[in-house]
Length: 151
Image (cartoon, rainbow, N blue to C red; front, side, top):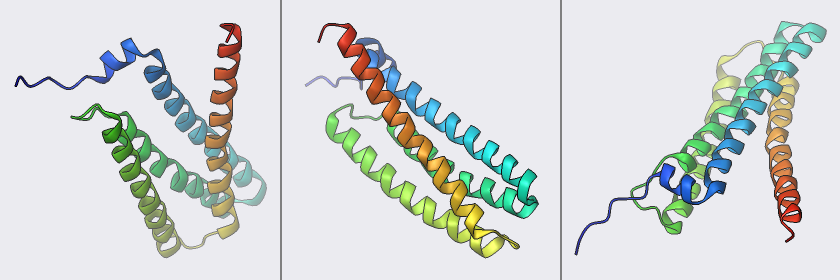
């Protein structure tokens, strides 16, 4: 039996346009999270001072870093291009994301003094909401695309 080389992501992206679009959406969501977290931190820094500002920034980072890990797990090529491998990558990525979130929150609470817990959680929550907004926009975009195709 002849060994078939794994299908590269570029081939999949060429054959299935949505594959490259998913990477684009992941990148846009991550960049949006970085932007929203930074703007929120700057606004809070200007209004309430440096402790609140850097606490909010840390909250945003506690959100973005694990989400980037999950995005990388899903975007990197795998030896097995099948659906089972994708589900396994998503499962491992989600577990890693959860572990990283717990680890980063623990490190921030142990190492950062003084800290505004309210600003930390506000930065985390607001940054996390960008993910939901990205998914909603993606779903809305798919609906518009399917309606314009006559489906």
